[in-house]
Amino acid sequence: VQLQASGGGLVRAGGSLRLSCAASGSIASIDEMGWYRHGPGNERDLVARIDTRSGTTVYGDSVKGRFTISKESAKYTVYLQMNSLKPEDTTVYYCYADQHYYDRRFWGQGTQVTVSS
Image (cartoon, rainbow, N blue to C red; front, side, top):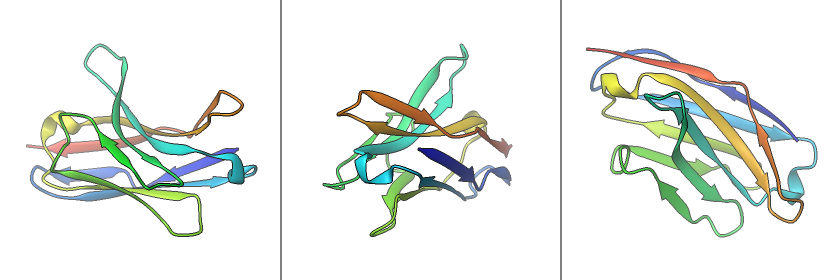
């Protein structure tokens, strides 16, 4: 599975950005896709994830109500709509895809999001 992420950039506080993550390869076995981002201690914190079959979504506490993850129908492309951005959202965002049966996780390249105050 290969993941191609796009959509990062520079925006003012209160603005919006949309990230995209397109999967290719053995996509039929992908069960979950989502986004992590680097936290203050350089750990990766969950931003949002979506079950590719049920559409069930989960969000990190810091982004609830501001970010929305969605999946394009019939494709393994997910979007992260980020609204009401804050300077503390500034970091590198990474998309991922999980194959639960094979217990494998694939990562896309990071995309930088910078929110100016």
